[in-house]
Length: 222
Image (cartoon, rainbow, N blue to C red; front, top):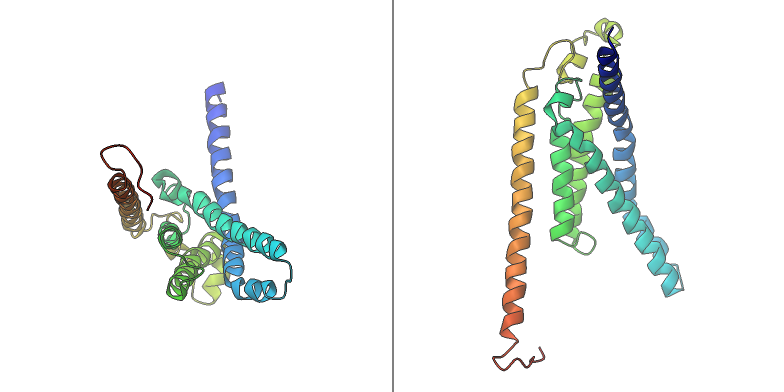
């Protein structure tokens, strides 16, 4: 082998190892995200037992930082499933791109609504997190991780299961490209909605500020 071929082999092998390692650790992050999110009633109940206001504020801020930080970290790592060469080429979980989109929607609700004070928003975030975790953990465990256990699955008549739940398991799943394209479109539309909402909010804030400033330049208190 030439030095260029050796270098290319190392790069491709390292890339595959890194991506598959991220895919293997994401079920843990999804699990932690669900646990921390649904532990909110316990945290509130514990806060009610504290007599020091400062201690309660520190405890609540630490919980919120951990909860939302886990969601953001999980989404950041899940973005690899929106890359066709990795998703198709390495045979990642079939519905992983959809799980990324659903997690993005949960974060959008947190950005646009107060999920801690609005029970309806909290329920909606909870439902989206459960759906996203199922869309990722099930194909990851029974598709990617169980891909080398087809003999055991065949004894139960389920030897086809790993191939169905993977984007590429020796043969490209015909549902892989449609799922990826739909996920990319939904991700783009959601990002466009956030951008439009942000720009409209800036325009409303600028208009309200200009209405409070008269022509002589004196600021009128609101």
